[in-house]
Image 1 (cartoon, rainbow, N blue to C red):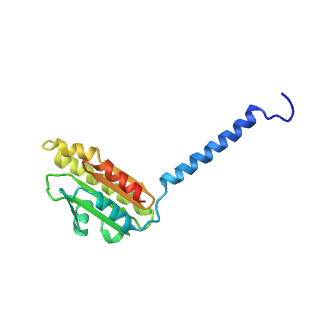
Image 2 (tube, rainbow, N blue to C red):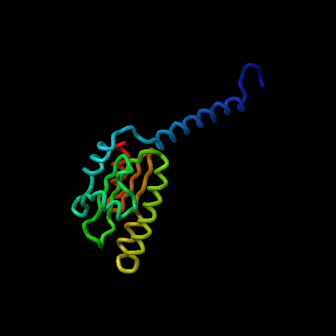
Image 3 (cartoon, helix red, strand yellow):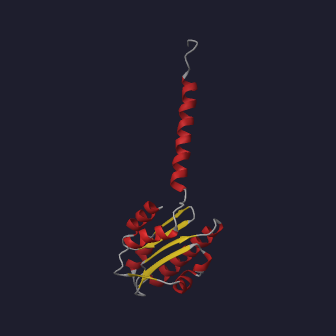
Length: 161
């Protein structure tokens, strides 16, 4: 080895450092929330919904279904099927502080399990819809969709942030 020429260990140290910094930057970009107002996110997601089977629900329906009060959050958009024999629903919530995220995700999981039990045995396609549901937490925003186009709705939600 000649003096003045860095060894492979020295070069690898910098390569690994660059990879770590790039990974952290990507992680922060992907996991970060959004400073966008709830109205903009709501408008984007709402306009993408297939409203032939979904209807906007009020705060009382949200409380009945999830056991949470819409007034406790910075914003709630809840669409559900007009028919009781359908598990289709889409929910977007903006929490006021990060401590509410766990509360909301637990309520969603509890609701999904209850609905699976309701439909088990007589509506296997609705159980499959619930099993394939999409959920995402991005900063202060929480998204949940149990719908045939759930993946599409999740993409619209993510791009609206």
